[in-house]
Image 1: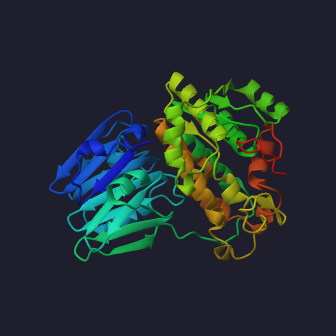
Image 2: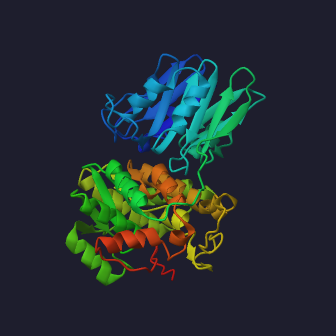
Image 3: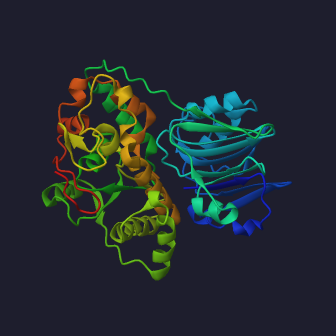
Length: 422
């Protein structure tokens, strides 16, 4: 989980940009050019470490993420692949961003433009400050830094690339992905293949799976097991289905989360993060997530793999018209024109709240979280399946995947807080 900061009007001492440092415990570098200032806190999780801020022939790149376009090429990291492809023409920069597969937040500044974006589901936090009158632009991984320095911060929307023209100092925003809502594929083969690929790409030896008795975490564990990947996992066994979680833990190298209460300093720091309404989390959830990070530290793990996004994308928190949570938009009943329902996953800002909160909390402990269910190719494959498959049962494709591989499961939804939904 890297941290990035850019401003075209920065007059503070560079040490003042301290809020992003915890996100990247492996190095902190800055660059200044006149009144422009870039800072990057490094957590290397993909390929060969690439120092940032990264100067290209046409600009300066700041990047936080894990993308996989470089796989199978001569590039040894995702940062190198992105930097080599950007060029100086801002339409080309936008097209490179549109083609990224994975999770990311990016800011690229040239002589003529500043371009920034988070991914299609805003899994990597990114905020900006903009003042057209005084011609100030700033972009940062942490809202509090911008608020402290400039007095305000706006979250970058999912699936949108922002382009600032330095000449007019006007911002335009363009759509990243135009989803195809044609529902004609009457089998799950492509979904299963893309899911396994999404899991495989996100896995590294220094990754830790957050295991539970739920469908989503179970599907990730099943996909790793099917592909012969040995993995380390941890489970918070409180409020879980005992039979299912025990059966899963017996198949894998799984530890039990034994998180201790938060320290006073942690309470204070996490309160400041949680003070943003999009990042609220209960103290008990914060404690559990801290326990995951402590175990990861003890086992030299940088990455946490989790199942967030499945409820929002593939089920709308409901089934058959019954809403399992108030944030459900239509009770999980999909119809013939999905474009009229999209983006159902962000009903009441639900997905943005969850991914922003987790990104900031894990970033506080210097860890990166990865979300296979929000893989762009996987989401598109599922969107193209027929209504019959979407509406057959709650999270049908995930249930079917577990059944086909005889993996222990149940259909009840139990959240991290232990609440049984149905």
